[in-house]
Image 1 (cartoon, rainbow, N blue to C red):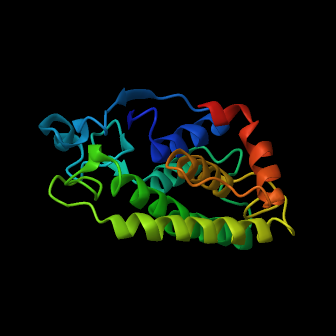
Image 2: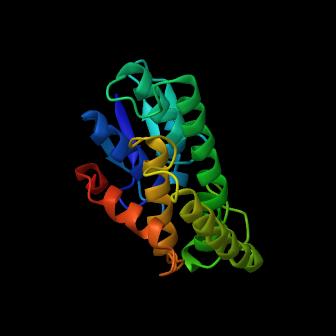
Length: 209
């Protein structure tokens, strides 16, 4: 079993943090997205979508998408539970992961891929023929800012994103916010609850994975 990874990319980081929380160690293969290595023949033979992360199982089959890879390891290594431990908490974790992917991860990717010259003509992951659209970057900034405000309000009633303990939703939110900051969208100083939560989860050893 091996994980196709990129050390500086946010979605592969989600999986690495999750694995660190579970105490799971995997062989990894580094693929350079910025340099277009994910669109080369060798990698496309592994994952024709050209996206990362990708988990290749011992039988040769693959699982891509960070949330799906994490779900696989949640089922194969149930302790500690990171997707909730009751029907309600499991639903809450799933709901928040989808919200974060839609309202933070995708907009941050839109900012990066529609402004950075490296992604000229490949503004959609796994493609080499999609031109940049600057308006998508502008809208991405607005969407991230709206997400920050909503999450800060939610944290007034909860110590963690989706449950009464650290879960995959916190991992997803931490990686999304760090990614958004990388593309230039910082957490406003007045969102104190969000800043406090971020400091707390970022201090976990797994955050350095």
